[in-house]
Length: 126
Image 1 (cartoon, one colour):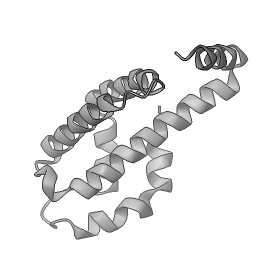
Image 2 (cartoon, helix red, strand yellow):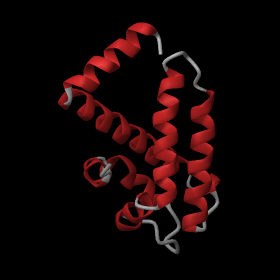
Image 3 (cartoon, rainbow, N blue to C red):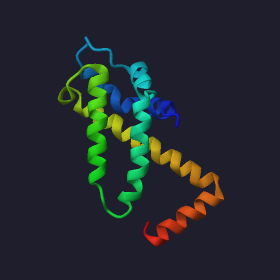
Image 4 (tube, rainbow, N blue to C red):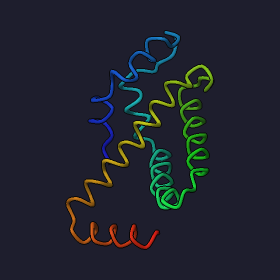
């Protein structure tokens, strides 16, 4: 999943938060793109996809746990306290979820077999 186009498209959404940050840190669009290429982000993406099946049945608790892991990863990577960058982290987590949704929709829309299976799973409540 390539999140770069979505980050660049939504840059205005989080650029205001970047401007509010302490100028001593190295958080900018390029460093955020590098952050999203970390192997640990791939693990978070897998968790998001797995939780989407749980969320179909109304179980949203797992998403909070995944976001906490994302917050900790971001804070550790950039060596900042998450309460100082909470708004930025929340925006970026939302963008990550959006990227996952767009990728999944593309896969479903471009593959009739996957679309049929997805429809069947939704009909069965899975």
